[in-house]
Length: 94
Image (cartoon, rainbow, N blue to C red; front, side, top):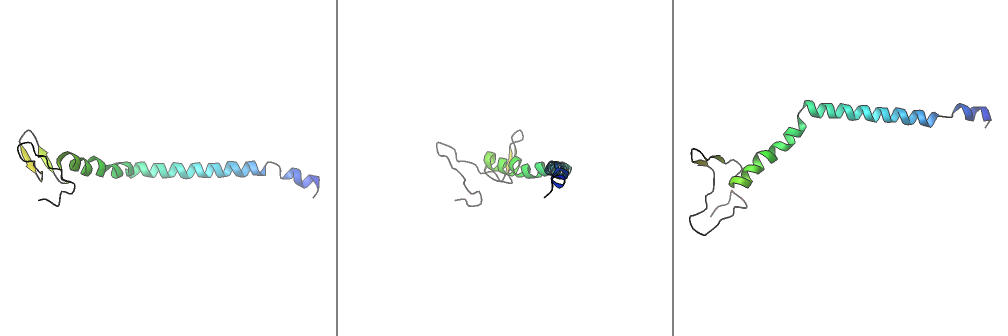
């Protein structure tokens, strides 16, 4: 291989690296823009904010509690006294 052909290829790896880095950055920016436009983060966090929060607070995923009015729908109530009931699965009740 002659010395002239080797010097003509100098820097080719650097140019390819820069182009690859630019392409990866462009793809990343397009994906994050679509995630923001489609509200993907809010959709993924919605079950945690609503469904699991209701199960944790009230014992049922569809529980609706209005503490000021005193209305409870689908809310398991523990009996009066010292006994405590824990509902692991709200669909199975004794």
